[in-house]
Amino acid sequence: MALLLIFVVMLHLVTLAMLFIATMEKSWWAWGDIETSDLWHNCMFDNATQAWLCSSQDETDWLQAVQALMILGVVVSSISFLVFLGQLFTMSKGGLFYLTGLCQIVAGLSVFAAAVIYTFQHQEILQDTREVVLGHFGFCFIMAWACVPLLMLSGMLYVHLRKRA
Image 1 (tube, helix red, strand yellow):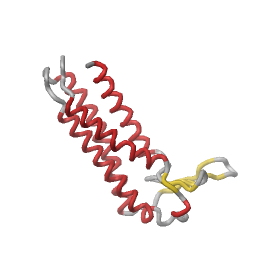
Image 2 (cartoon, helix red, strand yellow):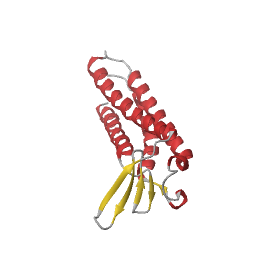
Image 3 (cartoon, rainbow, N blue to C red):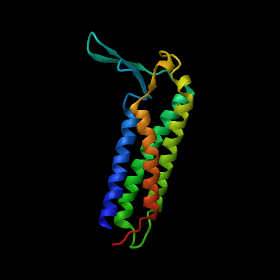
Image 4 (cartoon, rainbow, N blue to C red):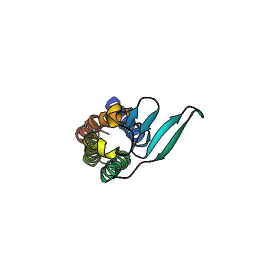
């Protein structure tokens, strides 16, 4: 039972870290190694200074929706971990972690909605940047998609996890 508890906690923390990186890092859309776009900035690599030059992303309704949903996912998953710790130390023997599991599932649905919106609306979100057809989805976008099943799995494990001691 202790191994299952450790596995669930590690899965939660790894997923939370991946979710935070996917929200904050700068590679939701990439044009090779010289230009990237994320939820907050458009960045271009300057060969002369060997540094990234970033400017704020043009705000669209779709971009704001993706930003809000990703932040909601990070916040709800963080709250879920705190709720789990609280339940772990205060719940009576035999209790189930329903609230923690529900929070994780809500976080997963939030990230899923953000990733779906970005998938179908990336051309409108990237409207003022270089040709979209020359680029591709970046690793943060892929990481956000990877977080969805991990958050759902974590939520389902919490729903079925019973406190033993």
